[in-house]
Length: 241
Image: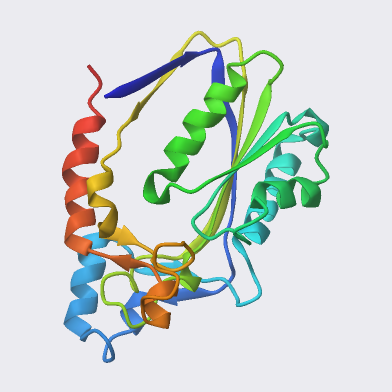
């Protein structure tokens, strides 16, 4: 188990942005799911309402909105940001990094670092631990972590495993050096043997001409496999020695 320990670095601000459109899962019965299946899913997952972005809205748009809200709420001078991290499974492009596009849109300094991270469900923790690591370095005092997703664009409405689970939104988190004595700890774990329980086959080199079009471009999930990881592996890793 990889444990990262930090002191003198803290989260000092969080803001969020979501699309206007709201989808009520309970209104979706009678098609792919029966009314009873819908109610069972909502009761099991707790997910009744999902926010869904309009076709022209990208994860970067939501991330920029969250960042602007954070700057306004905190009265933050954006020139004080030393590094920007963007975590997403739905970036604007394969290249360039969306973090660089957001740096420009937010009018941040050009002498800062910008980095994209794609780690699916664990992305915020990986992004946060990376932000803490950078902020623990000399010369970097403030890191802006942006997490944005438009998962509705990569989840098929015909997929019973994913269509009721994912929505769209973004969060902006400010991490900075502080004088607080309390520490923070991250437990990071990896098991690549179970890569296929949550997979998008399109966009990479391995399956560029192999699979049907919708299967290339949409997220495929083995729900039982993801459930086991979330309920057993994550629970064990959260218990620090």
